[in-house]
Amino acid sequence: MKNAPILIWGAGAIGGTLAVYLARAGHAVRLVDTDPQHVAAIRAHGLRLTGPILEDTVPVDICTPDTLTGSYPLVLLATKAVHTRAACRQLLPFLSRDGAVVSVQNGLNEQVIADIAGAGRTIGCFVNFGADIVAPGVIHFGGWGATVVGELDGSDTPRIRALHGLMCEFNPNAVLTPNIWGYLWGKLVYGSMLFATALTNEGIYPLLENPVYRPVLAALAREVCTVASAAGLRLEGFDGFDPAAFMPDAPAEAGMASLDQLAAHNRKSAKFHAGIWRDLAIHHRKTEVDEIIAPIAATGRQHGVPTPLTDALIEAMHVAEGGVPQGLGLLDRVRAALAPAPVPGFCFDGQTVLVTGAAQGIGREIVRQFAVAGARVIAADIGSLDDTVAACDGRCETLALDVSDPVSVHDQLAGLGRIDVLVNCAGGVCGQAGRPLEEIKPDEWRAIFAVNADGAFWCSQAVAPAMKARGAGRIIMISSGAGLGVSLTGIQAYAAAKAAQIGLTRQLAHELGPWGITVNSIAPGFVRSNPSTERQWQAYGTDGQQRLLDNIALRRLGTPQDIAHAVLFFASPFAGWISGQTLAVDGGK
Image 1: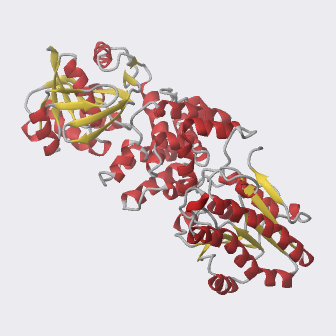
Image 2: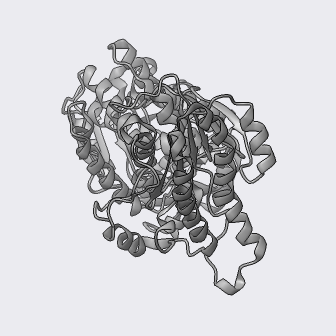
């Protein structure tokens, strides 16, 4: 055995992984953990590490805090940040007089440890590997990441060199730095994005690649970088994260490039979700948001830096901790804090806009953009509109509406009063997938027509009389590229229904034009905007996704914002002499 025994307080994903590697290197390791099942399993069978990096089971000495004895010169603290203060008080009697506590945790735990143990007995450490406890006594090690150690004051000491040598036995690429706070705050920037991904079920790299949510992730990172800069910190990069890309004066393209690098790094890891996601989805327990993310907002207040996105992230995480299911709707609560500036020239003050199909994706973004532009917006859908209300910060009314029911449509729309703009966005594939023609049943065919073509007709019919009486109005159909060509879904009814919408657009434009009513259609290209399009995207696989991108002139997928901006154009005075047209918003085909 090498040198003095090492005490690792917390045998979870981080502490357990370190224990296996250090024990394999010949060190005397003692683990402390409060989970009796985990402790019993390790005592009986050893600590097992699984995954693509290492498969091994190592006998390790483990006990609970109440049975610990001895004195230790080195304690690696590996608990969740929520337990740092209590764990530090528990371990202090077992720390030798000249010993040190090293935080191998997430967050700024060094500050808490220094308050209790003293700054001279505290050493900084940064770890970024991917691991999870998957069963008592079993840890899945999913992928390597940076390991960095440093004295809190940046000094070069014998003990920090010794600790660096120890950590190199875990990760040969471990770094010794004079700027440990730059790394710890750098991880807070990255960590804020991980917390954001944990609000959803999308996984880390899919969300980092998602064109709809990349802007809010980048803005969140930029906000944390701004706070760190105001606090006088020089951030350090790691594992594809480039802090310079998110500084206030950095171009947006730099942030997107850094997100690409982070996504590529996470694609190589077997760890699909962040540990925060597991806290919510699997363990149903409180996350570390108050210990890791809240200090960012507190530091911002200290230095006069507003943190609306960080505040919204904390609030959304509390909502998730309260039992609201994870999903993109929770992330939309954060996105709502990224209030878009009104599009120049597009002002809809005093106008009433009705948007059907407003519960998610494109419809939700259309509601949001009209709300920002000053309109009274009524969001209508058969599903829950809570997330839409949150996304536009409460600046919309809601209407439960089944567009396929003509009686209900006429009754409910009659009670809304004046409608200046109708956006027929309700549609979709009704949960269907592409199948051979001969397998399609009549009810499947009708279901898609009912919500796409029929719904657009009934809603247009309901608002037309009042628009005629007023001598003005805008009707906008959200069709699809499937209505102009072959549907990527392979669903015959969807292609036919979207083509029907385009035909209806031309017919109604001719019929309603004499009353000053314009009718136009938008045919979006592929936009990852809802669970259905997300499943479709994932089904293509890497090669299929690249082929799709290669067929787009601008070499990127569209976003709901792209579609919403086209809708605002058709609803604005700039489109006053345009009617009966279908605008393909597809990045160029």
